[in-house]
Image (cartoon, rainbow, N blue to C red; front, side):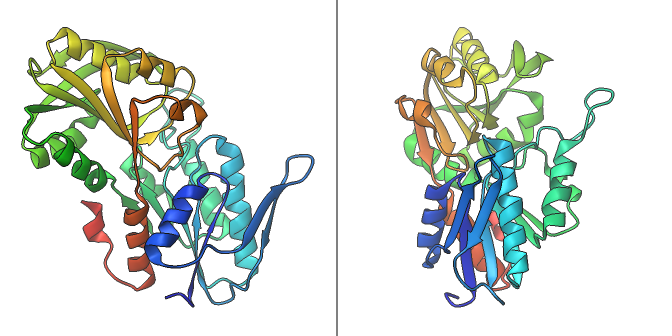
Length: 314
């Protein structure tokens, strides 16, 4: 495995790439990603990759466009260096929320990005908790959409053993995800009816379910500005929840997110390292990070050795 596999990474999440390599027992590939004075991306591959199976670890998180271009340019460099296969491991797939025409004369940017990645020369994509599962169909190459649920569930089972829990979804669209968690934690489910009045703006309307005197765990796929999250926490508190926690796969945490979390009734927010925690996030004690490195490392190993990846989907 050491001879045939190479793992490279851009600037978006080097610590996760290092952990994945440690999980696989392979060294990081030698690559230099830098900028020309005008901001253009320049990539230099510092080792022979001819005939190798190459994996690029790169979340397209903020700065989204820079990280996306790094992924595309690195892919082109590896393709021209005669890599046998190129797999883009994208723990967080940016632009995923633009997966349909939500208004007249708007783009479907998730499809555009899929086309860019495919055209650059990527043979396969591995990602974690796509915002919309149908984005897999935007690609004409294999896509493995892994779930961070096993990582988060292991933590919740240990952290809340013996507690009376209720899983809460902050919008109706996340009901299936919350129900799956509730089944595995053997607890009840609550739904918050959310009405969105604009981009990144949400208004909580109704709570469906009993949360009184229970430990409420709000579950979502991502936390962006934390407006939905903190309004959900406020509604839970008003309805008698004993304590409130939150967990999500992707911690986008843009704008006032950290300040809102710090000023909310939420005791702890559990995130994974698909997106690195910025300086602001490291200044708060309310955020706990879990790593998906072993999950992604196992997926890479199975892909490389032509084993089934499907058992990692649940």
